[in-house]
Amino acid sequence: MDENEGIDASKARAIRTRLQAIYDVVPVGITIADPEGHIIDCNPASESLLGITREEHLSRRYDKGWEIFDEDGQPMPPERFASVRALTERIEFHDQLMEVRHPDGRSVWLSVSASPVLRDGIGVVVAYVNVSELVDASRHIQRLALHDSLTELPNHTLCLDLLDKFREINETLGHDTGDHLLKLTAARLRELAGPNDVVARFSGDEFLLAAPGGDPGTLARQVLEVIATPAETAKGRIVLTASIGIACFPEDGRDAAELLRHADIAMTQSKASRNRHSFYNADMGRQVEESLNLARDLDGALDNGDLQLVFQPQFDLASRRINGAEVLLRWNHPHRG
Image (cartoon, rainbow, N blue to C red; front, side, top):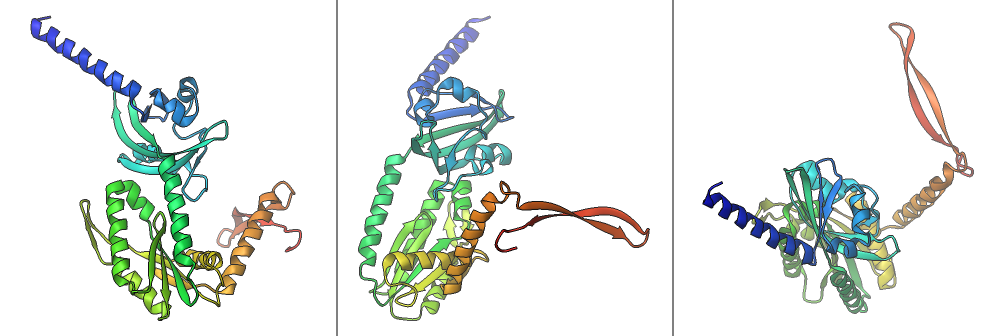
């Protein structure tokens, strides 16, 4: 080995030492998984952020054994994890917000980014930071803003506006692009709103518009038009669409909570086909209640023996033989039949 090789090796060791020091002390959790999804390394910060020891961490896969929830409180399926998508889709994901439940019952909100590496036995590198205080503060501010904005709701029309597929845009194109689109949408809504209207960001990609008088249908169509105006971003031109739910005082509710709930139900109806607006009506409320009741009954149907398989033969007229069967799962509801 000549002198230059010795110097290069010394520099490499110094670089590794510095990187290891950063890896060990940085307050950002780092998890590394191999191409098959087995976790092969993690840094000290990951223990406190995930609530498990290094040994427990290394015994897991990146897509199993985790209690992770979405912003709406629903369990997040593994195929939506930033780590899983980064490895399977070979693309970077940035600032995915998720709630991670610890084994002791505590939870922490993490902002997660993941990048595929695919060399030296590595499949994906995941970095995550604790944003619980930011989430709590944001929700507190939203509650205060909502309360202040809606105490003067008589004779107002309430619209909830959800940007379609915004979550996928945010996770794929990055937090900066998502923020830019949210700010642009807010500016467009403020420009559209009248002097007595109230515009607020309700949560995530949902906006609230409270407007006195006027035709709510016309207002909703105007909102859809301004949101659909192409947006120029660093990642290219993006066209957004929205799903709008409308509730009117007093026929759809006499207080803020009821109007919000009914506008949200109407927005859910719009989301079924996207880029449209829907007015709340009593039938929607009954349908939601009916769906909740059926979901509750179905939850216990298997344990109660109310589900049964039915095999329906398929007959080939040409050969006059049975060539298969259609399998049906039937639910014998104790009250609905």
